[in-house]
Length: 392
Image 1 (cartoon, rainbow, N blue to C red):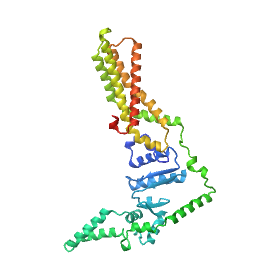
Image 2 (cartoon, rainbow, N blue to C red):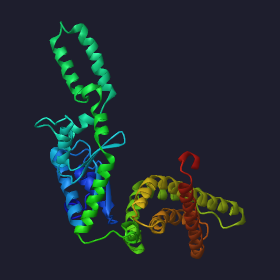
Image 3 (cartoon, rainbow, N blue to C red):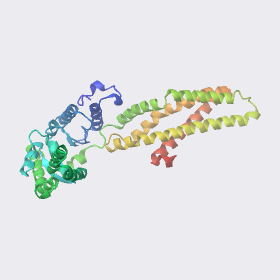
Image 4 (tube, rainbow, N blue to C red):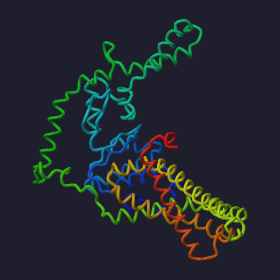
């Protein structure tokens, strides 16, 4: 948290932090497993230029100080962000059109006669050369057609068309070939690959290290950087917070008490005779059916909401599946059993099923075990059936 400068908002809910802080929290969640390589997809999207520069400086410090390899795609970077990268790769239609330093990219396009205008953002210049939008071309052709008929009557419209033609002209080179195609054809893939290989080899030789196949990063890196117990305790803490906010709501507590009161009034002080045997069986039938299905459907609807998060965290090697299962079970079981226990305390003594306290304990335990069984069935269906409607 200190590295990502998140100490001041450590106790702030995630929905109340700024956009830059939310981006840093996402990066921090990936750093928990201490990966050697970090892949980021447009980390500066939605941020202002100042926040984007601050975020990229944090990433640069991680790469320099922690020795991590950071690979990121970028969307409309400012000049400060653009020239802060060590290496730049430009892609067009799946083809590499440049790989090297950001500064050398300007020299590369200059040699091709596509020099970046003075004072113009280099990243925007590369985008203008590589991105060809058919909608823009169609609009220009349409404006050109309109201009032929109205050129003499409207000078402002003619100027607008010429400006738009100039923007389109930047995307075309001599002979009508697009600048994108020219950049693709001019880049030597094999020579670039040889250059990268020589740079990597020189780096290892200068540091006195040799790349050993049997000691590569893939073979030596641990599957999980934390112990099972650490994963379990952290997941229990998180699951208890989620279950407390989802189950221990004022509405659920009122519902459990109200249903217990209603059932107590419906079966109020039944005589302990053979004539009320079926009344007692109906009381137990309703109790078991209602709370089992309540736990089953609640558990079934809860798991699909967490499925995408689990897949994401599991793919990054955050924790073992057994740690998640045990944490989910042990954290939600107490919360899930509180509501039926409140119901039993109210309805059992009001209905007068049996005044023996041991019978009350046995009935309550049977009810709670049934609730756990219903929750297990709901979790099983939620994990097995991906389509919610089919599962229902």
